Image (cartoon, rainbow, N blue to C red):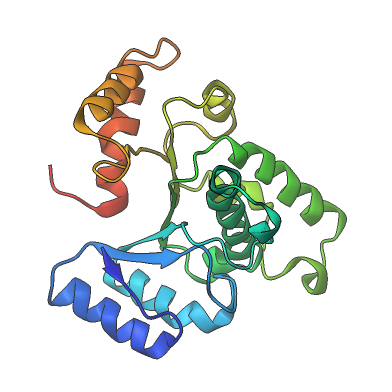
Length: 227
């Protein structure tokens, strides 16, 4: 996956094209924090148009916490608790409610390393705001209920096998958007990675076909990987 200079969208388009066409990468990573504008802003439309044309994946990843209001916290663990999900909630809201997926219906986007338990909550919040204020000047460019885009098979989320509310997530969005993610080899060693895979394989509330989806097939579909 390529890193793009999103501070300069025309150059980001060139780098995405080079990375996919010449370097044979499968897509690019977008930052969830640190930019002057959210990812739903029209400034980034040329990048989305090129990704759609190339048929490549775009993955949003957190990490930096600037601009999220977390500088008031004094301990790293407190910032780490909130930085990834807060940044991803901001970007999901911006992308969906600004109509990015209406303008680019074949675009494939993933929101990674923030877990997935917050997604049903955010779907309810977006839908509530949309339903009581269905005017473009209030909502943005979205053309239908925001939650429907989460279930569209174009949007993906990585999950943590240790999340205690995954059963509720399965009911809310199914398993098509879910990607197993271990963070290997960053903060997870091989032993823990294998243990987490075994945890998913042993889940009693998913059929074998659904486990295969979240462990492999959904990732193949998002990144368009060969078997």
